[in-house]
Length: 395
Ligand SMILES: Cc1cc2nc3c(=O)[nH]c(=O)nc-3n(C[C@H](O)[C@H](O)[C@H](O)COP(=O)(O)OP(=O)(O)OC[C@H]3O[C@@H](n4cnc5c(N)ncnc54)[C@H](O)[C@@H]3O)c2cc1C
Image (cartoon, rainbow, N blue to C red; front, top):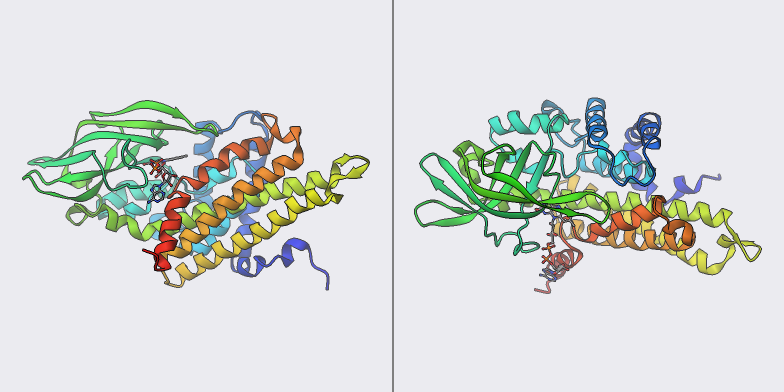
């Protein structure tokens, strides 16, 4: 029996469970999103905010957006494996609007799953439905990877909390309705206790957007300034139990976040590989198709091998997590591998395109800039290596 190369790929073994879901998501991309994306100027990196809002809400109505959240909160109760496959399909499609159809850094946050009933009803449910946008403010000038050595501080008083400090590199702050802000905790009686996460409406007096940082691929990030921001006790995520417990609340979602970034990277890598293959089959040089030259084959075969290996690692790690086996080193290994693979594959495919791929507006020119963040966000590559090294007993 002869089968199509993509159906015979080793990773297809782990993709079978959610084939129907992925197919219907791909149909949504092809029928509804691709025509809208085709109308955008080629040199525009990021789709306009109103279009992103439309995509988010439409996808939520169809049950794709934030699919991992329970049905009673407006989600679709999907296992992580299904969510990973959707992120992969979004990247693989090459449609610039597809990633916005799935919850990202502006969507529902797993931190809010630990919220009080009121926080879940007021914030998490509208986030799952795509009706609210949030940002997440953790990083500070002196606290990046070492994220819990925070200088921003929340001080308790008789009415609740007063927040002061400076947060940097906050994505989506310009269009967010709420900020999830993590600070050090001063209990007001001279005692300090760990870090605490708060949900703060963006229009709260004292909360202000400062500097704007232009990202390589067009998505801006912002400084968030907290100047005596007063909030009530109900703003602590998780209520009384959440005081000083931000690390504990976040820990169970770290692996999920990393596997989703890994899936996004695999999708980007597969898209870049397809572009490289198509070009290599058509472009001629010295009277031959360039795909016939071994140096070009080396780029493509190495990329294919690395993408397949990375997909298998990501999908297998997601399966293990779905089956209840939480091993942080698996997600770290998958994210490390997928992000570095995506960087290499995009680079090679651009090389295969020569000057054509380097021109502003070409998909590979955008991906080359866009993919660079992937070894920095959700824990840098070095931090993933620290996690894996620990699991190997090297600390
Ligand atoms: C596109 C993008 C979006 C972002 N969005 C947000 C956001 O919405 N909210 C937010 O709070 N933050 C956000 N960030 C910030 C991001 O979380 C941090 O950049 C990240 O945690 C790394 O911190 P840092 O940049 O300060 O680097 P540092 O932590 O200062 O690291 C510098 C270098 O040292 C290495 N290093 C650090 N510790 C170790 C170690 N123990 N062993 C070996 N090497 C080490 C790092 O890997 C890196 O190479 C975003 C960043 C980017 C690029």
